[in-house]
Amino acid sequence: MQFSPLIEALIQALRCLPSVGPKSAQRMALQLLERDRAGATHLASILQQSMAEVGHCASCRTLTEEMLCRICSSGRRNPKVLCVVETPADMLALEQSGVYDGRYFVLLGHLSPLAGIGPDDLGFDQLLEKLRTEPVEEVILATNPTLEGETTAQYLVELLSSLPLKVTHLARGIPLGGELEYLDGGTLSRAFSGRLGFASVKETNG
Ligand code: ZN
Image 1 (cartoon, helix red, strand yellow):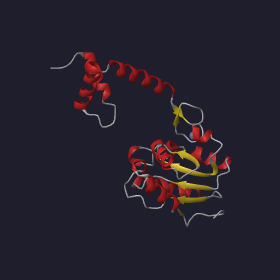
Image 2 (cartoon, rainbow, N blue to C red):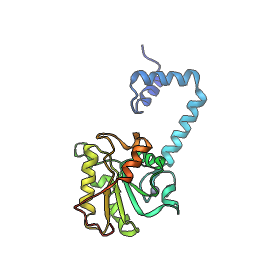
Image 3 (cartoon, protein in one colour):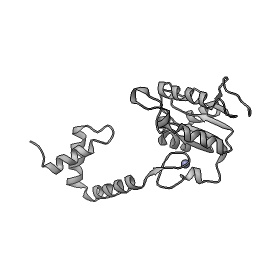
Image 4 (cartoon, rainbow, N blue to C red):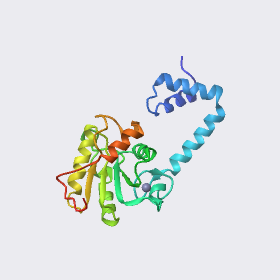
């Protein structure tokens, strides 16, 4: 037996959510229809508004509905330090750890030839432009300690090597394969305070 076409369509639509298989999608659809129509209507409205209005910060590329995100528009952040992260969730994790007061650049991914993600997709040109026009003295590479994250960091080290910058990497208190967004504040804090420079990079400020 199948549900009516509209209910089937709702179940299929819910499967775009991460980790939601057919059974979970069906449970969600029925729960909303049977017990929480107000919640579902609110969800639909917020979803539609978010998709229409949330874009990327013009300066750091994180997700926001503003032209500039709160961190980029804040006058209280240290403009001399720029932390490069893979995702908005990584940026949030660092913010919540409270160990960092500089600015960010969000790659929105990592280099992955298999998935067809190259330098053009990660905003490297925008990053270089930002470094040329802003008073940044240190770039902290906080990509994830996965193979793709490390590859991306190495690529950036090469890319930034001609600029008069100190380039550092988070210390490896982070477990291999671990993702920044899932680490506790203490681990992030130790990784930050013990960050390492790259010997191959010209360090004019360190
Ligand atoms: Zn921003």
